[in-house]
Image (cartoon, rainbow, N blue to C red):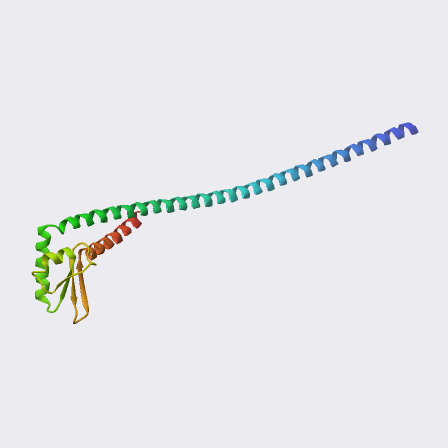
Length: 192
């Protein structure tokens, strides 16, 4: 075999080995690239999942805050309406009581109550509204006019024991409305 043929065989062998090494290097590079791409995809997916979870958490928090704000505003509206209704009811009842104290039934009721009270207790002073005092002073010498009593009813003042019993319509109306308000507040709190 001649030197040219030997060199051609050697060149062919070297070229074949180089092509094989190049193919191996390309395969290894391709494998590394695919592994890198896969790892990058997995990291991106995990990061995206974390970002999505964080955004979902933020949105839920915003939703809860908005719901809480809405509930608070709804409660405020309900309370304002409740107060408005109570004020209207109080005014209506007050006006009705003002009309009632002008009736004969009221005058008879008051006279009867004052007789009962003065029979039980000696030395008491009966405080009445100016109007009731004008109507009742003849029957009760121990009656006095009191400007603090605006609608009607009476106060019993016992100087010896320094006690006072307030049976004025104002105090009873306020007491009943306070009780009514408490019951209504509890009922509203249960439903809200």
